[in-house]
Image (cartoon, rainbow, N blue to C red; front, side, top):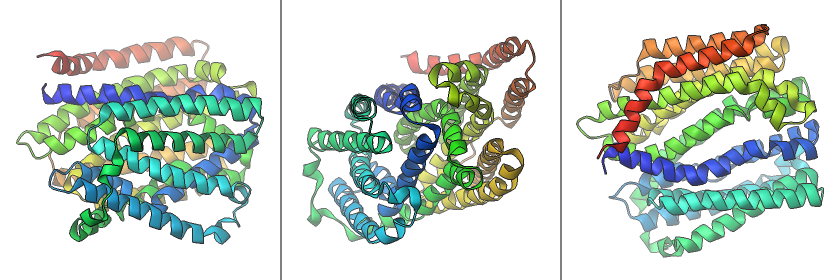
Length: 462
């Protein structure tokens, strides 16, 4: 099996589990929008995203180190897992001491028990999940995704439809699905074999922390770019605006899911191939296929934004479609920036990831306060787009000091112009808008079909 086939094989395996669990957010929209009001959905979104912010802080960002050092053949795997577990437990204990402060935050105070359970269980599940991925237990990782999907569906139906528990039911369903999934992973992979306090090596542990700690503010900064929009919207406009914006973000989630699946597999391949003599060539070829797929899918989703929204959400949320095109563009540059972050990961230069993300987060905050009062919800999308564009450009220039991969700048600019034309057509609202959108989607597919087929041939050839 060649390196392209190995990457494709891992991607497909991860897709089986990851796509189902990530895509679940998208498929569950009809249930959520019919059992929760826009204000309730806005509250749920704020609580979940606050928990996602607390998670890397409570775990000292150790999950990133677990997978990176777990992939390193020279590091004791028992030490990696054991130190990761102790870090999670110690971090959560410190987070518990912050409870009086968190109780002053309105939407968290009302759901504080579920919030703490959410963070604790998510941390343990993430530890187990990332460790088995670092050990290349890809089939078990995929099964875990399928299991969590099934559990989440069943538990959401019970708590939201049958018991009518509202916000509490949504959070409880997530906590229980993560708990069951974590227990299954722990025993299926026999992770108890990897817990050994004696195996914790001081130097390796210090190296893990040096790698992980800069990624805490990095994660916080990414949270700012992705989610501060919602808190600022809630502050300036209200929870209903937050609910609409959260729904608008769900269609771009399709692209994010695709990128997450690929990056799960790419982390394994990139570590193995980065130091090879033709590493730059391999990175360039993979990026060309990756970008072609991202552009093509984005073009199709811009075309289908209105119909998809009409089918998936209730009438009260339908207006969310108009915020999707800009967020889809933002997601394109988010995917490209994430790909380039793998270069820093291989160099173990997490500080560079931090600096590029901090700059983008600062741009996002400033633009949010500048644009939301002028453009409303649309201003939040514009700030996200411009901040991710800045992140991509900075990394594209700076990462060349490590590896001279080819990005195809004229090609990227041309594709971006086509997507902008699609967005403009939607906003203009021409009578024949669907014809123009479909024509541009077919055109952009035609531009990339050769690259995509070349990628397929690399995979299928013996």
